[in-house]
Length: 235
Image 1 (tube, rainbow, N blue to C red):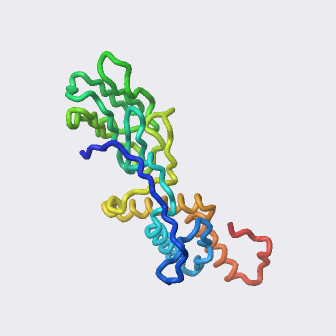
Image 2 (cartoon, rainbow, N blue to C red):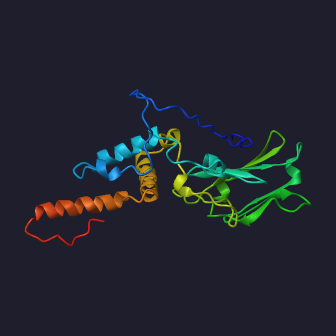
Image 3 (spheres, rainbow, N blue to C red):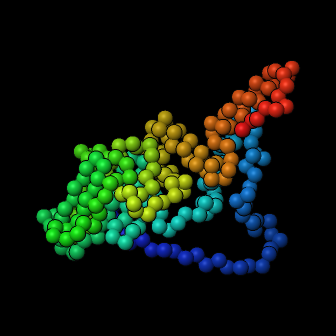
């Protein structure tokens, strides 16, 4: 199991350069890019490909908070990351701590972690249920308690580890491309659809289902020119 190191906030220094007439220096697109202008009703798949291609090339288009690295959060007493299938929780402990000095109770909807004889470090209701029989913990480098939690619902992103803790913006969550390649075709299609719909909603654009309905409506309208669709809504 990989150990999560302390996160470091990275500051980017923007250098101002004089405008250049060179064609190689093109301004980056703004957030007001009209994706609808590239939508071809006769080929919605092409539209989806263009959107995903844009997201891949403009990685800084959707800024991600430094506290949400690994699709989780770095908190004062512990940190956590997640994939669609599982969560990794890392709790720093005094160097040389043995397992017999630790309390780690993993239940379906509750997690308790701490040192014996001291107030718990984590003690709360989990954001969603897990599979206790498929979870485990270990001490890494004699200074880090590492916990793996297997989600019960493996098609959902968690906003926090335990209820009441600070939450992340799940619309900024993105599974790594390498992880997508490990999924079966049906699951990967579902994940990509979720990603697309999240991005569409954040930009105020139609989701994949809404685009499909619009396409069906347009097709129906073209097949029935004798009907009056002046008051019809496509969204």
